Image (cartoon, rainbow, N blue to C red; front, side, top):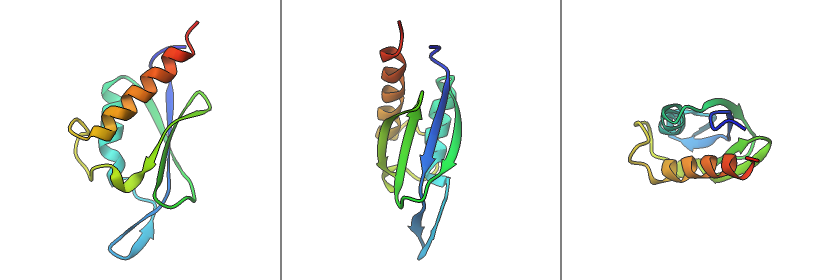
Length: 97
């Protein structure tokens, strides 16, 4: 499996300013980090509040509260983005022959 395959970012709605909605502002850093690593990604809305999941090759490799991700930015200073890139890299290494 190539190290730059598709990553699915599944995200749920969260509350901001009293309104619950699906927002991608907290995913911007994550998207930038994945793109810098050469991965392509797809955003997929889910109904679960405050959830963010990364799916690689049909398997959920990382899950967190979406509000724990930093708002905006490039993701380089966000410790969760570093955990995500490690989880994606490990998922590819486990499936190599």
